[in-house]
Image 1 (cartoon, rainbow, N blue to C red):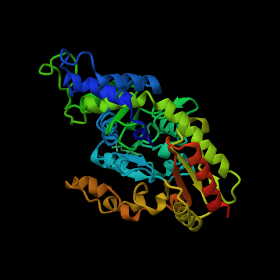
Image 2: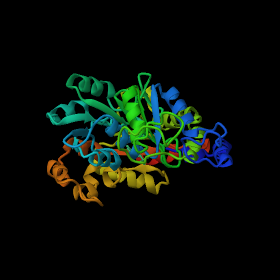
Image 3: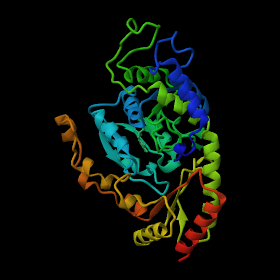
Image 4: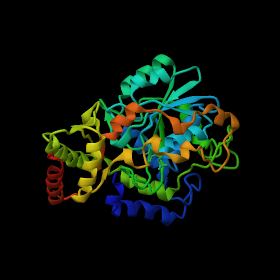
Length: 395
Ligand SMILES: *Cc1c(COP(=O)(O)O)cnc(C)c1O
């Protein structure tokens, strides 16, 4: 996930443009900014790259999720289906909207299993929020079909999968809205940043307003523009947007490099006994930020991940054993510890998250190891990595 590996003169130039004008705000100051609108430029280029009608760049991926939920009208009294394998931000955004996150199990794509969604539906279910984890896709066409049949809003958390696609269509563009993150460890970064993409003009307008205190950004004078709704400040600064403009232009090179590095490692592992790979509904659309593979069971996976680390194969993650990405490990969620007290009604509607029962996700994540794919690996490093992996996993 390594945009940070390749900062160069391109990022420096874009940031310098902004510093030279002194305008760090994305709106207004039309004279002083000498034609530099980095956030707006990023939005145009992102829409073009992924094929969405509209993009709104904001301060983080978490903000993007909150904006998308708000713009799609999701809030108090609603339930939203989410996978238990994600980053806590997905669930925080749902709770902060006043809605209840409902966990449905994942399948061997490591994403929400479309067949597990139906049993979680009830009249309060308003939306499905699949997460394209670790650079690759959920069975998004089946999830989309189900949402259409049931009249549910589909919002994609594409924070970890910018540039990935399913059958030629970019992830993030299947539902009513898609959310991206450009935080420091994502495929491309703004330092901090995120984006909501949509084809729906009304959703876009609400997103744009909500992220900036309800300002409608119509007309030139900030004192005279309309304020149709209450909002928040989820704006991005021009400095962050400038870094993103340069990074976005490197996306295709990043994807090519990751895919090449991943393919070499994956090929070298394909004959190893007891190893299989994460299911990819469309392998060509994989953004290849990670190589995720399965051992036969939890015991073998725990042993392998420890041995890979001692053999110097860095960047291998065992999500089932740490507290980053699996809902069963999130003590803050289990205790529903918020800094501010949550509305009584929301608390009453939420199940006891410390007791969520996810046998299938347990089984799958228990045997999963994800290896981060880097851009900066030399041929020599790749050879050494492949050799060490063989040593550890040959059985
Ligand atoms: C990173 C991430 C987010 C949140 O993005 P931030 O920009 O860090 O707020 C949300 N969902 C997933 C799956 C992520 O990986």
